Image (cartoon, rainbow, N blue to C red; front, top):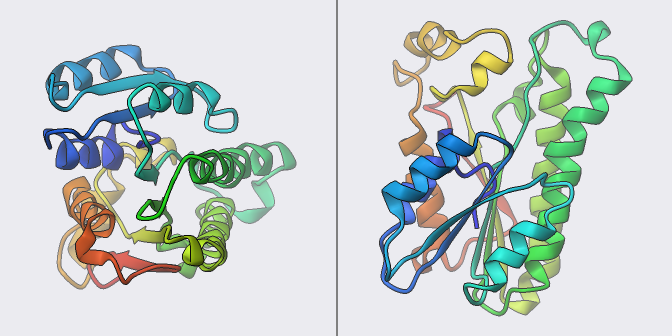
Length: 235
């Protein structure tokens, strides 16, 4: 299951994972039905079905009901998140805090809660954080940074709690990635503008992050849990 699975990093993860015989994918999305239909048409195969489900991650019952129809849940990628317009801390009011924390923290936690009820030994949860959690995003979106710091804490705490059950919980902390999310922050060209100044000389791509997530989901990462790795080009 991939929340926010029809665009950006989520769609890249879906493309990275699709096609393996016997592996079904359930992609959660908020409201762009046309985009959801397009990615299902691209990836769906008889031996590896793909389903897209519109839902709010704060109330993810429909998403998990769709997953139940396809078999045991073995992997959950919590990718869905919101980012509001850049601005100073004083302009972040209570309503905006509620919106950002509602999706980025409470929604992720609810998906984790529903997911672990369905997972057995060998299950993996990957939580999408951000380098903003470490850097703080001053003058841009401290609320988003704070929400991702909470994600890091959930990854650590839940990973330790579930380790005796053989369920791994890991995180990925992307840096500046060239996706549509920057438009939500009012700076659609941010990746192209900031990228050349990063240590590796470019912004990341959704595929850069997707490959790391696919590895963390795989048996190759079987001894990794309760930690978050940076995919940030050195930022």
